[in-house]
Length: 106
Image 1 (tube, one colour):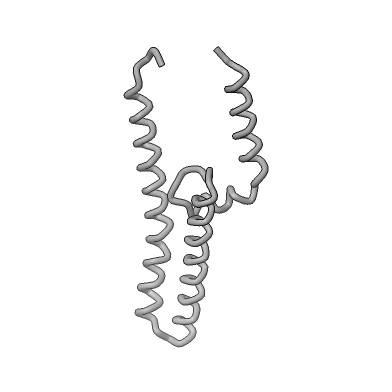
Image 2 (tube, rainbow, N blue to C red):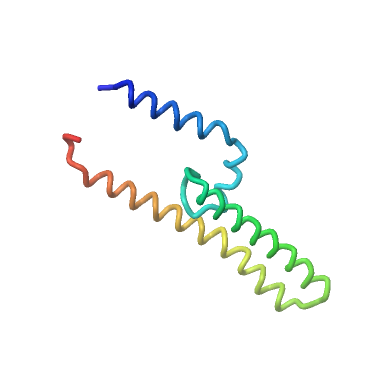
């Protein structure tokens, strides 16, 4: 049965999600599937900043003709989003599994 509290909570969640549309671009750099708290947003910003600095270091290494260093940095640049995507999928799988363990009466 839908109660007034549930509707108010859903409206609050919807408003908080729609209020920060620019956060959807940071989900790529977040280890969690959604950005609910400020800490999630801060972690995503730090990882995005780290990725940007890594890209700048790759260009600088290419400019100074340090090809091995640039190759290693490119590997880290590819590995960073892949690891974040794997962690997001793992957290979603754990959440889905935990939901399936609940009794049907709930």
